[in-house]
Length: 122
Image 1 (cartoon, rainbow, N blue to C red):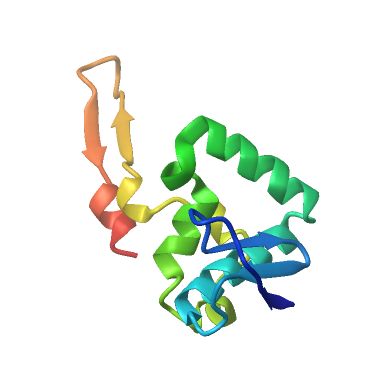
Image 2: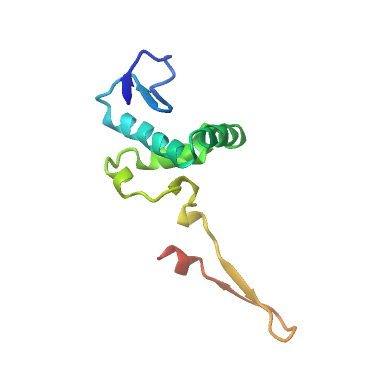
């Protein structure tokens, strides 16, 4: 349920399951951002979301919080929740993944292969 409410000046919206509280219900990007948090909360059985969210917040800060990263990344895509995969907040950005395989053959000099470009192109 989306509710228009007067919030502190530094807060545009917040998801307090099962409610989404926003200053302006007409702000579709903000509403979508909060709907993404609502979905995250459902996926983690609500209490798990809030505990993990707080841990992420204290560990990585607001902008480094993986839940916020997903919400900010997709807030302008109003169809995102129709097409998103479960636990998408937990899937790392492919551009942040580096894969290097090192092969040792007969105790000789190791040969290394960087497969990052192969993985990121998929």
